[in-house]
Length: 519
Image (cartoon, rainbow, N blue to C red; front, side):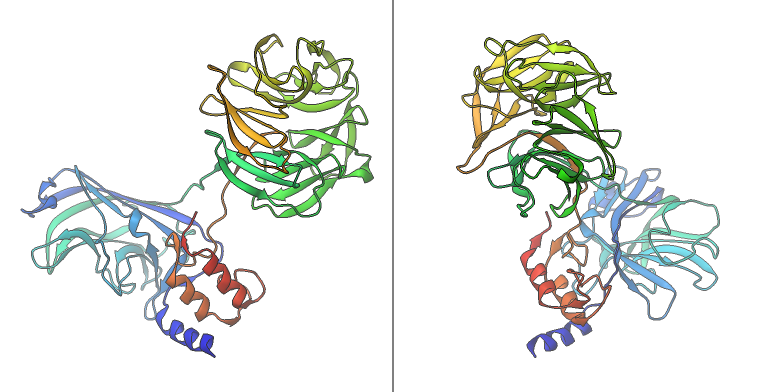
């Protein structure tokens, strides 16, 4: 009963509509200052002839439709609003007036004309208050452009993406208003509406075969990002290598499950690419080239090629790889580490899997023993983790000549060169860094019960903050009101965060759990 009461209140308060498929959109207006009669404050420094730009960001799902006109106002992210005129920069009034919202409004056939304006009113272009006090009231930035009626097809912001100038323009107004007066005027030149480029994040994935999960570390300096990036799900039994599929998903090779699994960037299991039914056993290092997976089998003395759909699993390399541990594709060849007791070598293979030569020949006593992960380093060098004595991190030049070795005090399985020049290593219960210039070793993680394996980069576009229904960058009271306003059966509603077809307690808990700034 209490929920119903809250929902009724929310329905009367909440005016912003949210739609599925959110896209962040950048808007940029350019022009030139025509005149300035303001003689006080910051705006007095604006001069005729100064270049002018107005930029801000919108969320395509956050809008208000006019009840009276064919107009739709998209909520401007207040922090993104920047008006530059020469050397003067000003933002929106802060705090923004209570009960008002800044909108970028689209007009479609209103009537027989299309256009855009910036306003706190979705019906009329009244401008938005900026963070400078005028002589009569707060200065307001007023901007509007009107085009012929065939310019826009719909009121959809993403559909309106493009460049607008004087073509089809019938009227424009760009002024700084002080009450009923317009003491500063600008000449409009262009308007750009462009979906923002999604921000890509790169992390380093390290399987923990002690707990059958995947950790994530910073590619910049190796600091811990997430100790449960891909959670244990009962499928992984001894994950060895987690690699980037090239499609913002993760392939995981598993030694005891005899399988390659695929997971989404949020850690959700997607499918089993291939497993023992295709003849796979005791899988080791994994690599992806041209959308084909390559994985070594410790028991079969084979590196297999697996098609991305899993339909084809064929032996790719059998010669020279008695116990293949890892594969590294380079520009003209591939390197495979071989931990066979009689070899302990790193082999060089052609792209068709045929054996070319032993790239680095080790006796396993004075050189590397039990080579595991092989990874590229700066300058064409190669890093290899040496698991058995003499344990350590080994560095080779492009031709396989050993040029460096460091004892890190444990048996490493994974190795990767960080952006800061340090080397991240993983093995046993530890993940740490090595400074190759000084030999200094520092632990990042040392946790009992873990067993860390190979290290691989993974690049992805972070999922939007799904509980941020108003697109403000924070999960807060407005988002809570949106949930309550849609309470009950609501298939397809953006407030139905769990996709159940109903807006209910699970969705409410999702908002409460995400309360605060979005990550």
